[in-house]
Length: 198
Image (cartoon, rainbow, N blue to C red; front, top):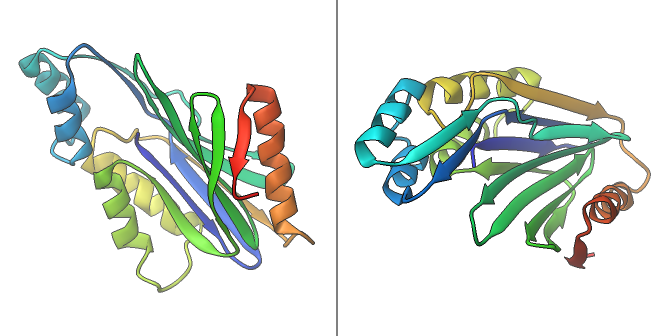
């Protein structure tokens, strides 16, 4: 997990995500705890600490975690291990959002609403994003998300230096219907069973 942030407002929605994917092999609990707790800042420190702890890792900065399809913004963070696959996904349009948890082949809608800030990531990145964006002041926009991702990339090795930010404007006549349609299409493509708040 690294960082995906989405904001749904009345007339626009914005989403951002970093591009880092880290694969862990063998016994990596101590390393993951340090990394996701914000104790490891640089890639060099991450590689050094993984060697010290006898853990094996592979870092890839080419994974797009946010996308836009037919005016619907979506983003996802994942946790994949030998015995379990868990994804948390957010869909957003102006005036609406859906939060979905996918475990194995089951996609469960866990939350839905009209306007909110959604932060998906590890403990450290969620806290950082909330401190910068969740104060209840000015709604997040492209500039504030860009500043956040630049700061996060310097503060923790769990976030890549590169990121993607997407926006969409113009409220849809029925935001929830547009969101559910996008989710249903993804479920059909991926072979997921849809359940939860529909």
